[in-house]
Image (tube, rainbow, N blue to C red; front, side, top):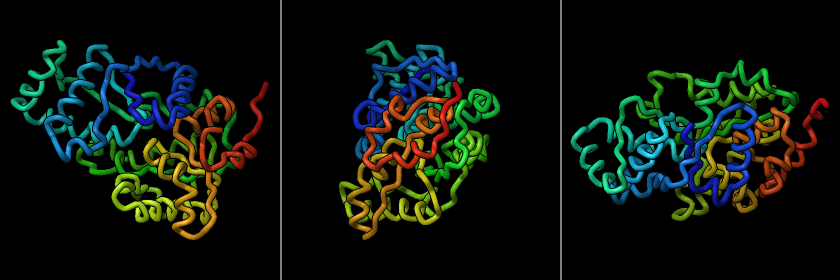
Length: 294
C-alpha cells in the first residue's frame, strides 16, 4: 500500500511509526512509504488558504497514484483533513484541473478515478479482515480492559468519511478490541474531541477535556485507552500530567497507539513497540499481558 505516516508519527510519536512497520510486516502488508509527501495541513492550512491545502493534499494523492497502490494513513487527523480536500477536488473538475496545473511542474496529476485513502483501522476491518487477523494472534489480550478513543476525524462529518458505504465505521475500534481478545470499556468520552485542536488557544479548556476523558475511562475500569490518532495520543498521553492538575485528580492511564495494541496481540514485546516512550506508564498493561507461547 502507498503509506502516508503523517508528520507527527515521524516526529513526536516515533513509536507509532516503528510499531506500524513491525505490524505491517507480520500481517504481510507491504508499505511503500510516501517519503516525498507533505503535511496534510491538519485543517489549519485550509482555514487560511483552502487552495493551498487542497494542492498540498492533491500532491500526496498523486504521489500515491504514481505507485499504482491504494493509500493508507495512520493518523485520523490526516484522514479528516485529506477527506475534506478530496471531496472538494472530486466534486469540481475545473477546480481540480486548476490544482493539477500547479502539480504539473513536478510531473504530477491527481485523478479521482479509483483512488482511495484509508486509515489503518479501516484497512484492517474492511480490506484485511478481522477473521484473517484473528488467525495470526499469538497473545490474546484476555483480561485487558481497553477503552476505545475514536476522537473526531474518523467519525465526523459522516457524509465526507464514507459512512454511506460503511455505516459501522464508528464501531470498528470496539470490534477490533474484541477480536484481539480484549474487553471493550464503555465510557462517556470515547467519541468526543480530545481537546488537541484548541490547546494553543485555550490550554486549560483542552487539558480539562482530555483529563475528563481519561478520568471517565478510569472510573469505568479501563486498563488503557487505544486511539487511531497520534494527535489524540499527544493530548491524552503527553499532556496527561498537566491535565491531572486541571481536573484535580490522579490519572496515570496508559494510552496506546492502534498499531501497538495490535502488535501486542501479534506477540511483539512492549519494548519493541516503543511503549517506554510514553509519558503515562504502560507498566500496568505490561503486567496483564500473557506470555507468548514458545
